[in-house]
Amino acid sequence: MDQQARLLLDILEQHGRDLHRLLFRLTLRADVAEDLLQDLFVKLQRSPGFFESKLPAAYARRAAMHLAFDWRRQEQRRKKYREFLGEEMAVADHHPADAVANQEQAQCILRLLDQLPPLYRDCVLLRYLHEQEYASIAAQVGKTEHQVRAICSKAIKRLRDLLRTEPSHPRNSSRS
Amino acid sequence: MPADDDIIQRIDSLKKIQVHDEAAAQAVDLARQRILHGTSRQAVARAGLRGSWTDFAFRPWFVRLATPLTVILVFLAALLLTPGNKDAPRIFASVLEAVAQTEAAFCQLTNYDELGKPLERQSLYLSANGNCRIVGEDGRYTVHDFRQSKSLIVDPDKKQGWLLHGRPKTPNINLYEYLRDLHRTNPAIELGTDHVDGKEVLKFQATIVQEGISPTRAIIWADARSKLPVQIELATLHNDVSMTYAMIRHIRFYAEPDPTLFSTELPSGYALVNPVREAAERLLYESD
Image 1 (cartoon, chains in turn green, cyan):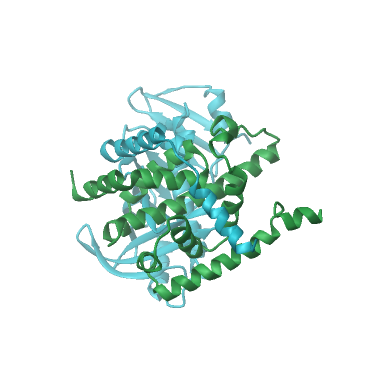
Image 2 (image 1 turned 90 degrees about the vertical axis):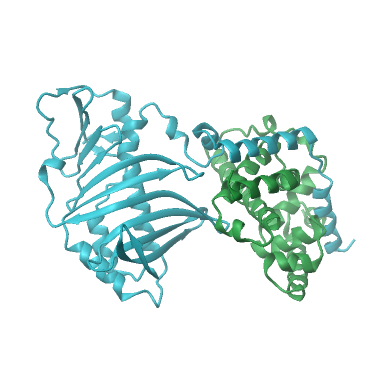
């Protein structure tokens, strides 16, 4: 087995479950998380950036985040297409809604996060979902600690603004 | 409750989502299998990485027709749509100029799966008038004559051929026309010099970015002396991850095409099989 395959397997053994959990939390679909985990490692296998990275696990985590949000956007397009064709959505077969108790709240924040620039989104998720220190995030995204603090602050402000425009927000629903 | 607390609370809701250990273990196991043993085409198609048309019953015909033309289309689109670079080398214009002086080309096209394994290699003969001949590894070949709206598929093993009338539904691409039009753009970034098959070559890169589609990167190697392209690599870019999906190698240009290569006449001693299966014709062709 070559060195690259060994590194991939090491990352998979040590962080595979965490990456799968992250993908599940960002897609809310068990079947999709399973597929995306495989896709992630296929992509990492072809990525010079991953093998050159000083923090391969962090690289894999960010790649997983991007993969999940890419899937969300594709799913959104597929949904619109199916609606256009008048087809019924059959998602319940894939992921029982009761698997995620607070599905609506989770979907809402994922929708908002999807509207952030990728760097903002990565920083917010690493900070608030993974509870990482600013210094650690800074090393992963190639910014200074001070810059990451500013990015997180701006991202939260942006999310706050976006939340105000959400139809499900109490302020908006009370108006209607 | 302040809105930002609400935001944090919502992100916290993601943390509370539990994943069954069994599901995680199964997902890790499948990913491990992929790393160790590669992947099947069915798994790839299921993951949506490659269209399910690969399993289509008429795949050999379809691939012979569609794949090379699609690859060329993507390559040309990449060149045409890449934003102009103020430092784009004048030398690339001379490459295009050199291409415009030729009338025929030969190249080998290899498609790859996402693990970098070659899927299929085809030899392509292209004529400046748009006609082409595509030869598979099994020796079967297809000749497309776009002017006469007909195509000939030949199976040398069985000594038989099929004649299809009408225009292919795949894009009608004329490599030469597009390359000539490229003079209007400044599409490429120069990547310096390199060596291919012992020759010194100039290397260029062009990237296409379209909303909703992973960007495509084309790398073109052109002979430093003749200025003609000798090799082209096409890759998708996804999260800074580059995945090569096609390689066009051994490109050779000729001043004159060999008309026998583009003939749609069935070779003597071969049986003409007609009618073509209706479904295949309906899928691939629009009748005139």
